[in-house]
Image (cartoon, rainbow, N blue to C red):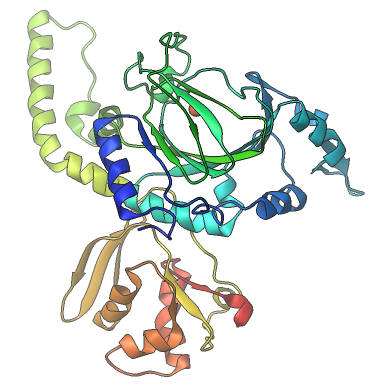
Length: 397
Ligand SMILES: [Fe+2]
């Protein structure tokens, strides 16, 4: 279960669909499951409170992007710099005429969604970006197309008709975006999805969606997974540290010398891959995917952390590996770095590993030796300063 939005059964179906690269539609059991994931109230707030412009904010109709200055005013401050404001009276006619309003990377603009996407990222050990699509008419936003990453669709509000076609371009990569192909004539799946339905569309599967002359809001989550090409590119970078691979390939070599060199490369590569294994690659990637760090101000701006019983703590790094405890210390690997702390931190880390918010009293009672707020502040100082732990609910502070 992730944040009450996806149950375990749906998660298992998505994992299976990703593994086997098949399309998936999960009909909802309850209409309002996603209502808090992206409420209209938040859309209206984002449009009002952020200086949005293309490509973050986009209006699209019939596969064409409408120029941003058609609905966004460029204003000039007295000191000179330009800032933007979306203009209601210019925006609405486009929406009424069938344009789709898109806010890209909307997870960065709404905390509830940011939290949910962060939890999904930890589960998939991959970067995820959420884009929001809002339509009112019956005009397509994009023509039938395929994406070079897997897509999860969450229908938050209203309904939408989707058509999905077979993937005649198999496992496309980002560098293949210029490939012009044609979708198969008939979709293998076409249906109207309703509120709280989920779709999983693997990369390369052609698709398009149309609204039904009523308001529709959906989120698409683009999920970057690792490919064999990613592993080999990473391996290539690491091999640059080996003398054998840094040397020139002789310009005027005889065929025999080339064959010998080929054999040397092959042998060295096989040996190197034992250390630079796929497992090592995945571990290194897991420790560095997108970091949705929370800030801990005002406390982290001072050299000593001052806590109150209203302060709450949360683990602030997406992935921790190689967690080890000895009689003297705990150590672990995250953000491409090895960290070491005294063994007294062990119960604290174990408490925080659930990525939930924990109150100060709970933290104190988990420690072997009871300490007061001042000493807890001292204990937390290196964790907060290194961005490993965040203090939140600061309004209560
Ligand atoms: Fe798409």
